[in-house]
Length: 342
Image 1 (tube, rainbow, N blue to C red):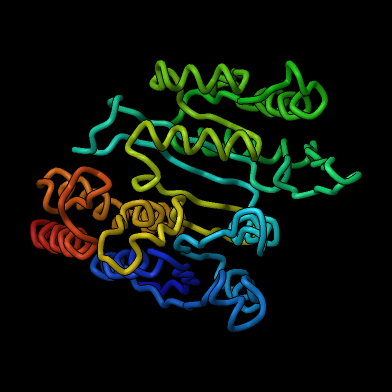
Image 2: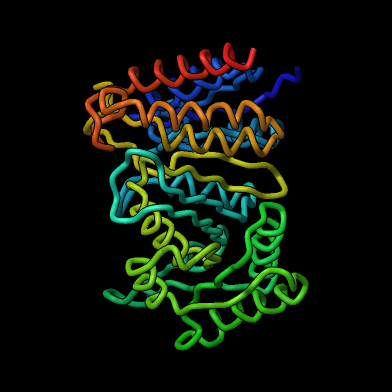
């Protein structure tokens, strides 16, 4: 069995708790992983003078793989988002977020199965802002043919590989005719190379309304960076919130799999945090490196634990359990599954 070297960034707030849970579950699954653990965020800033030290970037570039817990981002002041900096520095251009209904998690909808693909490197997230004169700030929206084409091709390749039938590009080209118009043009051009996959588009505000009214009408969504940030959180709300969906940032230089929720400092250290989102991201990571059987067994264990009763689910998804309860239950389900197969 091959040993996988993976960079581990526990983050802060509830990050260390959910990360420890996921590491334990991955160990129970039998995957052979050698972790390279580093601090990022405020702790790294106090220790090294940089919230994202170069040694962290070097580790990810060397291993081509990282698992990252949530990191607090200061609002309005302070250091730049670690997530944004990682994506830009390592050119992790594709944000991938599968959104699927989970058993025994009560929501307004059933049988949701969406894939959200978000361009990760430009748009308003380029951070090109300046004050023209006091009281007037300009923020530049950057859309390029190169980035728009490669994220469209990523989406269509994903659809072809995973048997998805339709991709809907989301835009505001009726108003931003040049920037969003370029994004839409690149999408339509790439779509011509994939005649077996349906390609259509929606204006972003209409898309949000349609998602709330009837989310099952969509298959895959392709979005620019800002729209993707907003709509991916909206779709997470369809299946129970950010605590139950995983996320990945993928590029030619590697991939970072992360919890998409915040660091929840108000419950840090209280054994209340839900590890499911980071665990879903870890399952995606296993699939990415070809460890399909452990990924399948963990998914089966998750379904079994969520269906077992509220005492094993954390409070945010209608349960009465704790982080350690969920972790132990998933590991127990993995062991029982292995014995049953044997």
